Image 1 (cartoon, helix red, strand yellow):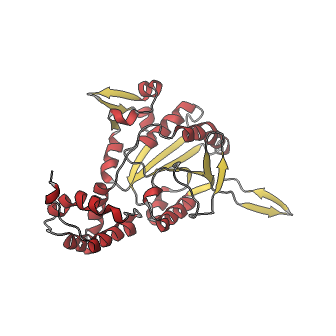
Image 2 (cartoon, rainbow, N blue to C red):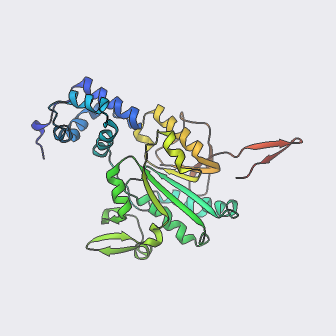
Image 3 (cartoon, helix red, strand yellow):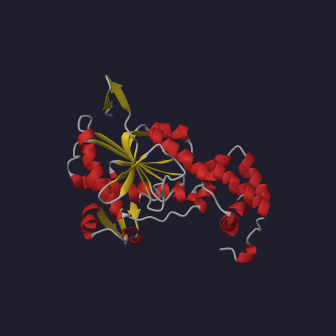
Length: 295
């Protein structure tokens, strides 16, 4: 590992150029206090590309024909992916005890359920969702798809393997641990009963075109992701979620996040255990009477 004096110096002007390029690419914003972090984490990458300074490296990631691939590697190095199973349990109680109960009724004819974990990191969140659905029992035989997406290729590799260390289980109870995981050489592999309905893909949340391939979603989880975006990027992401959600679908954000000053398109819904956002159903007027159009 490089000592501090071995870091390639990053000037203020080049730092701002790299920062803005990253923000335009994926929405993640680094404030003025992040210069040293970028300098520290990218020095090895700059040297691996045979550059001796950040200015030439910036030109490379800005103009090279493989710039998107290189930017993806930069994001892998700069993003922190701290998560664990059954995170924010009150919200999960609202999801399992109230949202899923409602969806069981509104979707009982199609028997299809589609859930998106946006910014899924190493996969603990979508696998938690899969376990909660399995525990309900009433969705047996349904066509269920849980889609996890992230912009970090490294964490997606971990998610697809479904093998975890002990720090991923800080709030899980012994029941779920014993039922859905098997220990292998000090690590824990998730069993197919929870893994089979989950798939993962690389996805940039501010790119509305690629997310269209996901189709309509009944629930979108995007927890503790928007805090890393600037406000303009948050609006792009939320607009994208609105388009992807079915009418009456739910958006679940982290407890430190809200849509204040971001969007007024959603309705804030108070459930027993938590507050969530709902995409309103369209209404039609027939002879003076309003009727809700069902999904």
